[in-house]
Image (cartoon, rainbow, N blue to C red; front, side, top):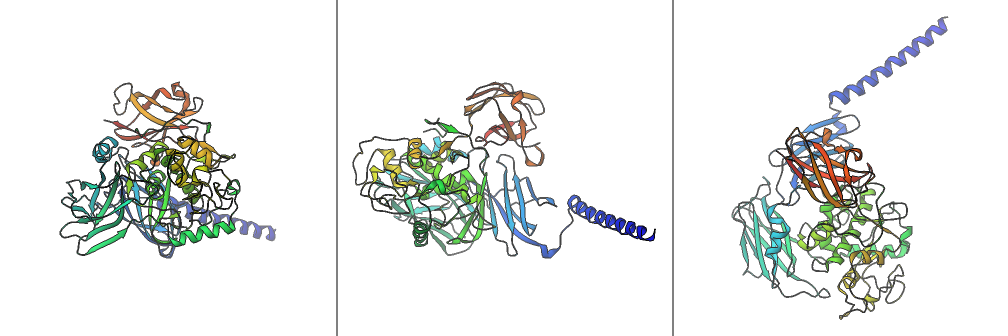
Length: 574
């Protein structure tokens, strides 16, 4: 009897102990008790508008782990010190007029500085396509942009912007915006582009000089500049040439990697170096089985792949900053659109297989060339192919490689390393690993030209044909797209109203409407299910009922709960 009693006492003791531990975990989760100092580190974060470079003070900032959730507030300069648990932390940021951003922050003992870029739902007036198009000149390159104070993040007026020829100058207005026109000759893509040094100066501030900026006629380069109070000059280069390190990685890959893209899986992350509405594809497409990653963590201030800062941004904003660094902004739009798709898929492979716990990809040419300077033509190419990627037969996003000149890379003249007949590149010297898309070849196919000059006998090709040519074993995915939203009655806050949505690639049997904005729990989505939508076709949703609070909302369409979302359309409720 005593033996049984002692066993019961031990068992009861274990139950009590487990109950105490469970209660401690629950209490820590609910009351957000601080963890031990040695388990935490301080991360310095700052928030910016991705288009203007202005600092922003988001209304909602939430960090969370498995045990804790904290709501935080940045200061008026967009700065915030985050005291976070070592390891993985989720950061979700939302603000009225901006798309919600969510990312993983991996906190190390010595964390690095993070900048968060939020995409506005509505393009600033100075960056709208019609306005920029009105500035373009056939005899000049257009340089536009914004200048802000580094400390406050607010726009700086009366900044002098000048080119290296000394004759061309502009001055920023109260929004920190400027327009500079620089004379330039017509451009031949087989020859080096015209380059200028651009200088930003204001009394009381350290000057900023950007060297080797490529200037193109009938195109506009957009800058986002921060000036630090003080004296002197900060000089940086935007030269496009690939680094020796990147070329060394390509040579290493030539020896070690398979020559069959079908065998390169998503887990392989070896080193290597008109209107903006998307138009219909002229080939069979299929939807991805899972949404694309929405954000990417970019390591900056890098020595090859070792970086000391991180910028977090949407995947689409990142593509806009890579495309003009990897393709020429004056190339044919179909070449740029094919390039945007290749860059997007290649970037996803890094998001799925980060090169560092704290960032997915580096900003140096050891990963993929990146520049904060964007161009009108390349922005348009990214917008018109938004979220489009290549998929394998298992609906996985393909690591869509590319290199500068794929000719004579192992299979003789006129062929790529993948043994693809690339007759418009015959005679071109090798420049790269030769796998996937030939960047120069994409321009020759799009423009109807050939290496060495003159027209090719095949005519011009569109971006879909170019993708099918260089990636013959894959399908092109196409998520739904919104081109227009029309309220069918006045959208009063708190009252039900209906909207009509026009676009493309809607699946009538399972398309749904997703709304993000004030009143959606945990910065999540308010979903209008397929069952309450009426008049649904592949290009229109005749009626979608909504009841929303006052504020700005992002409206998306999505084919099924696991499908990719469309582009966001802005809806304002008064």
